[in-house]
Image (cartoon, rainbow, N blue to C red; front, side, top):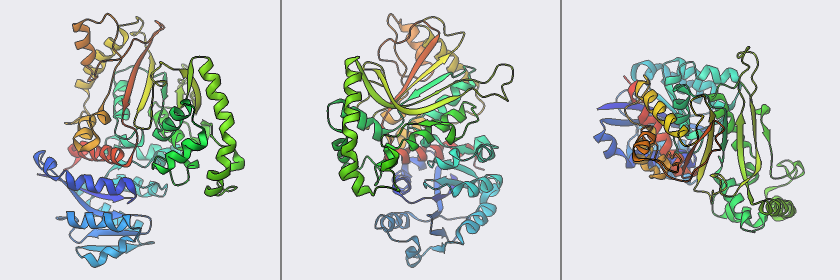
Amino acid sequence: MKNIPLILMGCGGVGRQLLQHIVSCRSLHSELGLCLRVVGVGDSKSLVVAEDLLHKGLDDSFLLELCRVKSAGESLSKLRDFGQCWAFVHPELQGKILEIASQLGRKTGLVFVDCSASSDTVAVLKQAIDMGCCAVMANKKPLTSTMEDFKKLFMYPRRIRHESTVSAGLPVIASLNRIISSGDPVRQIIGSLSGTLGYVMSEVEDGKPLSQVVRDAKSLGYTEPDPRDDLGGMDVARKALILARILGHQINLDSIQIESLYPKEMGHDVMTVEDFMDRGLLLLDKDIQDRVEKAAANGNVLRYVCVIEGSRHLLFPFIIDLAMCEVGIEELPKNSPLGRLRGSDNVEEGWRRDSPTLKREGEGVIHWCRRFGEAKKEDKLERKRDSSEAGAEAGAGPEAGALRGRGRKGETESDRSGREAGSLEGGGDEYGSGTGIADCDFSGAGAGNDTTAAGVLADIVDIQDLIP
């Protein structure tokens, strides 16, 4: 039985859901020869640590009680009375966490799991990785801080997993890395990366006022407590920055053009949440309605998307980065993959790559999948279990691990077999204009605490080969 000790940072909705997933998957992990041993759990104010770090973790009854305590808004330090743990409070936290990393890092392969929403974890993660620890992240902020921090985190790239930072449980990042490893340059990414904004855009398309849609989304739990945190587009921008950096673009958050759905005059420092919900939203209805009607007249719909495109200068690739990254509302054909998105449960990214081997319409995806499949077999970093399979087994559901390629008209059974050799599930309509751009869609369940936590759990399981 392989033991994977881990420390969880962040006990919000995702962190608590992850602990519940770990407890509920004990029998499954046992069949896989794994034991996930939670040795510590912390938030911004407190840290609880197992009394016997080397041999035991916090037991399941303790973890479930911890979830109950945090759901009630109480402090982790209250769990001191529950027994079997040591409790520490700020400002002892960082020092104690690094002490544990030093004690267990190279000896046991300690995994740091960051499910917080804080940028303060960057310093801890960098030092922990230097000490031989691995890191699994749902928190986007460490990956969207300075380029210096980003490079430091990825000095040991095999020790990092961050699939859940973009599109929750979908294997978008792993798939993108494999495409790049196969030698196909990615020239453009267009994606709908926010389940919340996807819901908003599809509802206003049906003629509902933006103010009503946002209120409904808030009541359904689709938005943050202050919906402006979603409507401002910053979360989408962080996801776009992560993808852009994976492509090798050395850009920062301030390089991204971000379209907010509300003006500065309705910002956090000007209006309270209540004022924004009661008065501010009503002032936004007409502008969005006009844009929806204009798009409909052209046979199009509005979607909030990210667009990443560009390349490095051919003569000076390490000096000039020609990347362009922007997020905002785009007018798209109604029958396009992004135009067909409905509700919050669908996240679908359109990927377009320009490659000399993808000239002929109808065969581009087939050829790419074969090359992708061959590169996958030769990839020395290939793990025993694909993250998409692990995500589904961990409770993400069949759609959360789905990776779908577009079918082609006139495709033979042989062609279809070749297309599916790259672990893609065929289907859909024909797209492409014979311009040398081949498309591939990634679709599935949108971000939610359960889906995100399942993706994090899949990443933890996926990292097992690095554990002694």
